[in-house]
Length: 367
Ligand SMILES: Nc1ncnc2c1ncn2[C@@H]1O[C@H](COP(=O)(O)OP(=O)(O)O)[C@@H](O)[C@H]1O
Ligand SMILES: [Mg+2]
Image: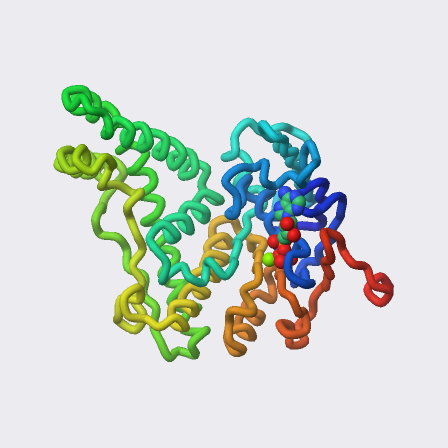
């Protein structure tokens, strides 16, 4: 997959700008707060319909402007695709090849992207929320069924949690089984897809981690054995677990079991990484995991996703940077940094200097 160009109108600090990207490495460079991450965010938004930095779409509209527009021409193995998003104060419209889509699930998969910022380097040492977010984002892009199940699960979970805070115990106990029936159906889809994802992720991560550490360490991602079997079995098992926890859930006022509480376990050279690994070790492992995500997309969709590396080079040591560049040479990459020459090491690329929400076109670059 490849993004050919991107145009931004009243998006974040951009008034009106067009980018053209080459198939390999594209470097967005410039001082802080000029709009590099904003551009990377726009690309991710067109791929997924969301941004990892916002609570509400309206934050994306340039302050003082009525609406924002992002558009891109891309190419995937089925041909050309044009994606446009108009974002207004009170809603948005996304079009694919001119046709308006009614739900976000229809956007997923046209252009897949892997977004990598310094936050993802903390994937292993941070809390389980971050690891679930990683799985949700990644699996949703290749499985609309997962994305839809996740939305429905979260909605029912919110309703269940609201019910648990009710004062009427009789009402709670009468209503819970009804919610749980539906909750478990969607939970089973989520659990099963996550298990399949982790099963794919584990061997890639192991190989990439060995590459990044020159074979000095071994990364093992172990599957969650809590729920094994097919979707029907998973749903039944979870229903029993929910039933056993009614009293606890009512006491605490929230749902204590289910995929919203699951986690991924990482072991580096036999030790639980969350508890024992050094910061450097967990970063290298996180890098291996994110690069595995790139490989999984290729395996599932038949082509590489677009890789967005937002400010990660400065967080990696020299050997890791070089290995990263080597590994991504056949993936279209949009990389942001403050000093292009410090991260390149002679790699071929298109350089784009960003200054105050505009591309700074210099004579030698325009030639
Ligand atoms: N909705 C918005 N309207 C106008 N400016 C914005 C908006 N959102 C963010 N900005 C501005 O964008 C700049 C940050 O851009 P960013 O892409 O994060 O910088 P960097 O180049 O360091 O990655 C800040 O100056 C911020 O004030
Ligand atoms: Mg930035």
